[in-house]
View 1 (tube, helix red, strand yellow):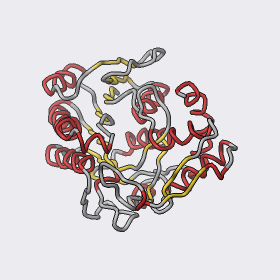
View 2: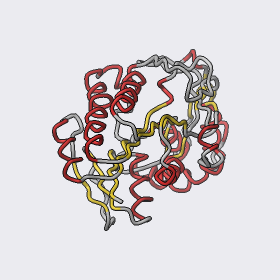
View 3: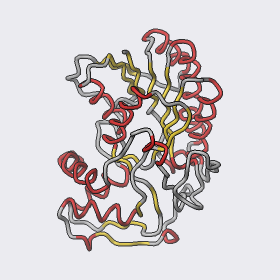
View 4: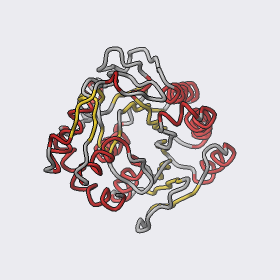
Length: 301
């Protein structure tokens, strides 16, 4: 089966390409700026600007994948607030273009969305809770969801939270930045009263491979356990064997963001678990993250 993975050098895309390649799938993976590493015999890498919508349609028409897994996005929350036109074109219009192409050429479409479609007023959001994004990133990802739902029948929208890990083209993010600082024995300020469901990229990728077998449709929440950013950073310190007092608690009210952040965007994953999907315990995932990404972090310091 041929699978098209967008954002193949990003955190999730990179893990997906590795796992799918090892399982023998025929893969087409896209990238924009970061050159992919070689060594995958069954992966065709294609450089593309997803805001060139005619190229998006041509890509799908030429490769004719059975499944599209759309992981590529403009995920810089503050950047989206500043560069709204780019965020709109990447997160909404490119998603719409892919969905239109998939309607004609492929059988199943997976769109990776975000917990930031919610306002953070209550936490542990279920799939049927009403989205209410409070920043432009969340709004554009929600528009992407609407495009997929309106154009396709055989689709799955996966809402996840704070994907972490390491990859050639993945952004640093909170976890990797924390790991780098702790390796340097520097202090890490982490919010003790903001909650999320951090999701290890490898865990999410493994579950998406299972989804290819199950083919659920609609919307599903697939993420890690609810935890504060402070406890998230503390677990990284513990796994690394760093001094825990390097992690300093700060209040949500003390931090000034360019874009508003939800106070509690954690996700309820009961529906995913009922399908047999699961994310490992947070401590297990953090241990593997530290083992796999410490050397990567050192290279970037």
